[in-house]
Image (cartoon, rainbow, N blue to C red):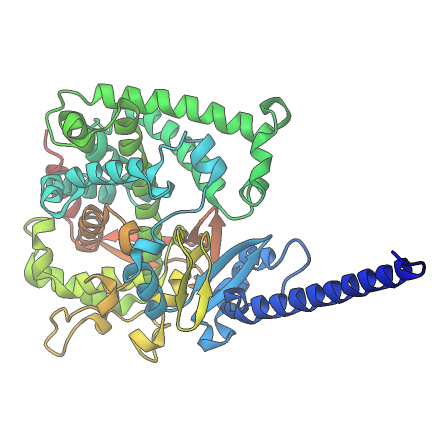
Length: 508
């Protein structure tokens, strides 16, 4: 190589390297630009701007924002996106969008968030109502359907009548006891007046309260930061308490199922035990399937009765018209029965309207997407939490008219006073309080019968009157549930023989 060629070759090498670096940089810039331009994350639904790290998590915890301001976003607020500390979440504010996604795309939207404390630790993954869309959930839900299907629910008519009579006799402070006692009878067929049953109600109520608190958004940071599950138990009080709760609840639910063996009347526990092999359930799954239905049923029914009572004392003309229908169809010779339901369309409309007007589970239980999906040009990523804004959907003017905020049972009746077809996406209920898709409330047929029995019996026997101020828009929150603020009212027998006839309903 001639002298002076090395610098020339080095210059060429560095020149080529510089050209390659420049081309690589241009490629990376172009690639990034294309990725950005084509990224589905640029097409998320509209939503509020959040804070660093927290995102818009605080909005999810703000009930006033959720129920009032959330609907003000684009697309009339039907679908709103929240970044909850890095976790994608959407709030569905209309029946149209909720039904489109959760019913018509149920295979994508039927999963649940993890509920690390409430389900995985506190319930050992056994509280199937908030469990993931997996084999265990499918087996347990299929099993409960054996005892709570429309055909099976007829078997509980006698229990409804008996417990409704007890409720009407005890009244008004005993709504919680009535619903707990009724669901106790349906699930375990336990005698409701014994000391053992009262202790049983108290113990299950403790379990129910723990689960309700644990499922409320923001209760435990581990739901947003799952790595916290690796913290040793001795350093994490929430983990110790939840694991102790699971051990205690499992032992108790197992004991209740064992005691339900050989009962005289049909109940959910005996149905699952008798069909355990066919249903492919373990002993623990039988116990938790039954316990889950008790915990869910007693609390939600009590809340529905609270809101119905609020409506009756606030709108006495509605109460009076329902009682006129009862007098015309039933008379005063006997209390009403669940079998009378088909002949009492106005009373049925009152119950539907009460469930539509106020929801005890205002955000339902969130769904979770198990795949990336698109909806009307908006991207919803896999793993997104989906909250249905139940009260907004149930008061959607596009579905219920300009007076959707008002309590008006006539919206469910035609000009002849007969029940008219319910809005298409309400599954013949006239409201969406029971949920959507694969996660729709599996006990809704029994729940409807229970509410009818209680409400018909109370209205047949009593006149309800407010004895103080009542605010129909005041609520108190407990975990994921809402109840009306406390109000005072009086229950006066409508005729002298009412209480004696209710006593006869209980038998010897």
